[in-house]
Length: 336
Image (cartoon, rainbow, N blue to C red; front, side, top):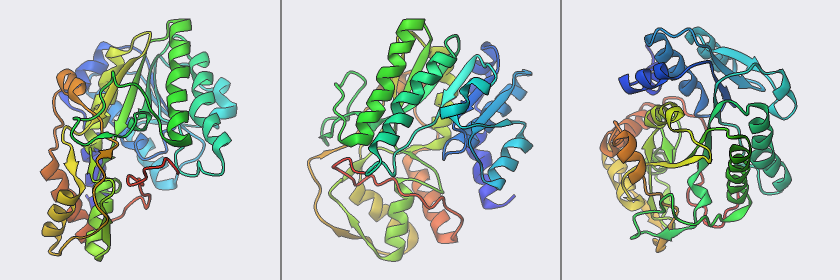
C-alpha cells in the first residue's frame, strides 16, 4: 500500500461508535459536493461503517465532475457516484434520508462575490426545499465568528457571529437559510463550524512545514490557530445524524488547543532538521473556536497534536503528493 492509499485508509476507517451510530439510523446517505477535500474519505468511511453494520443502505456521492483517481477510489469502495450540477440538477437526484451538505466556495470569492453567495447561501435553500424530510448535516466554518482575543479560549457556539469579509458573510447566510427551512419544514439539521481540518496533503500544518522546509519565513500576524485531524472530523460528521434537530444543532469542530504558530513552526523545523524563520509579530486576536461542546459530546480527537506534527513532517520530508491548495489562514481581512 503506497503512502496516499495508507493515508486514505486512515482517514476513512470508521470507529465502532460511527458503525453503531449509523446502524441506529435508516436509509441512504447522500453527500452533496463529494469531490472536495473532505468528501471522498468521508463517503468511504460511511460506506465502510454501513458494511460493518450489515446495512444495505446506499452511499451516494454527488459531484459535477471528479478526477479519475477519485472517481475510481469511490467506486472501488462501493460508493455510488452521481454526476450532477447542484445548481441545476437537484430534481434529478434520488431521495435519501441522510444528507451531508459539503458544497461551497471560498477561494475565488474576491471579484465574484455574487457567485459565492449563490453557492453558499442560495443553493443550501434549494437543497433544504428538495429534501425536507431528510436529516441534513451541513458544513459551515469558524469564519462566521469574529476574530477573538487569543486569551479567550476561542469563540463558542453562543458567541454572536461577526463574519469578516464576503466569504464569511455568505457562510453565515448559508446557516441562516438552513435554519429558516429547518424551522419552516421541521427538517432536522446540524451545522458543523469547522476550524481547521488538517491531513497530510492539506492544511495549516502542511503550509507551515512546507515553509520551514524551504527556508521561507512564517508570517506571525495570525499567531494562533486550532487544528484537528480530518479523520476525526469525518467521525464527528457521521455521528451528527443522531443529533440533527429543528432548529439546527450547531457544533464547533476544532482542535482543543489554542496552538501558537511560532511553536508549531519550531516543532516542525526540529522534526525536519532545520530552523524556523519568522516575519512580523503576533496580533492579539485570531480566528479561534472553542470545541468544548464537541469534546463533551464525542470525546477528544483521537490523533493528538504531536502526532499530527510527526505525520506532517514525515510527509513533507518524503515529498509525497499534496492537494496544492492553501488555507490562507493568515488572512485577517476576509479577502479570498
